[in-house]
Length: 96
Image (tube, rainbow, N blue to C red; front, side, top):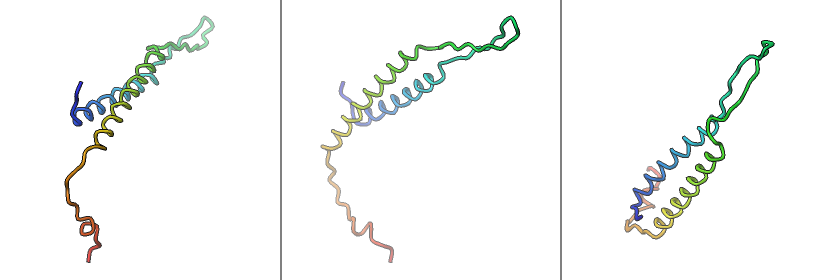
């Protein structure tokens, strides 16, 4: 698939949002259920709402793909030259 730089950056932003969502889901995936036993003593039971290994695998896949996308964007940007005359001395001169 060929992408423009703008499309690649848009994909990168969406992947970052998805990674953030999945990371939050991974940290919140343990649910604690409280109940009382026959003696009235409170007991806590934990159960996973999602498969943490599957979540971690998906997050890692997205991070690896995002790394490749970012590297490709930077490689293309490194080859792109701008033809722009920037008067640095004038722009950065102190105010008189």
